[in-house]
View 1 (tube, rainbow, N blue to C red):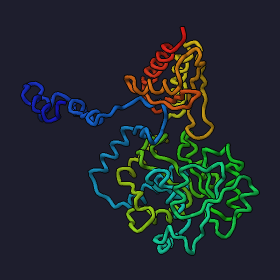
View 2 (view 1 turned 90 degrees about the vertical axis):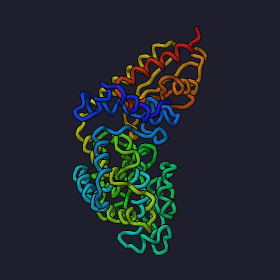
View 3 (view 1 turned 45 degrees about the vertical axis):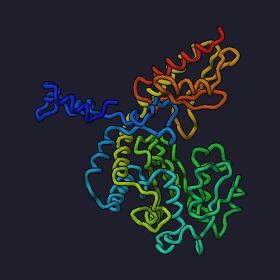
View 4 (view 1 turned 135 degrees about the vertical axis):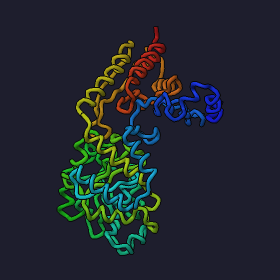
Length: 404
């Protein structure tokens, strides 16, 4: 493989090309960057892909907007006080999202741990150092059984015991002097027996702080203030999903007293449960800019574009005899136009996993999701034009597998 150094040496012996890189260049800085751009992933022996799956951490979330990348580059060349930056950015975010206070965290899971820790300790710095030893503190967090997921480990990091409930009667009976918090998974709002507004109402009735995990719940944009307006004391969103911010950043929003307490557990403080949850100046500024851009978007136009893209792929897949498609929008999390593709495997002789593997190993590589019954696709993480490539490849694979 030709190296960058060799490439530059070759350019230097060419009169025209060499001159282009001197002062007063005939080409722009952007073009120079394109000529010299290294393909790092290729050098590592890795393939990039079209993201037809969604904002999954394993697939590296979303792509940042150019303005976010510029903000990150800007911050990387300057020194600032980390706490002061969090103060200033938090104030702006809180104003934009109509809440008392806000802070940027190292993702939504980090926000859950820091928020839980803040509720447990308040502003008592001795208790901050003491965690996860809960001696002298409340030690239980109530959660609906239908809201248990692997990410609730972020709560258990603080040493608490999760108390599972199913009905309102169960929940009220579970509240006692040990109850520190009530935790809600927004994605499962329609799965549990106790819905969001009732959950908040119970929390207020008994004076128990409520925390809503909304990690994947943007869009719609109004969710960014809906749940703090509803009365949840703390709410978190992932930064690297629908907001198109840094993947390792997130937002913790809510009551000022709890945000201040959560900050005591976060870097730059060292002797805390959240020391490893560092968010740097580049991510903090990048998250602010990502949020500014997101709020200014034409969300209606963006939605119509996603619908058009999904329909294009749906029409291409359903043009194959024996193939069925279903366009749907999840009720809460990942609330975007989505596509399920299924088929009669007696007529189209290929499994869903085989289709996903062919898409993954093809050129270009395409990542999708789904189970044994369907191949599932979204377009909101695609670059313009990639929906046509996906539509063509899906149709080609299914058509080639059809029993003629």
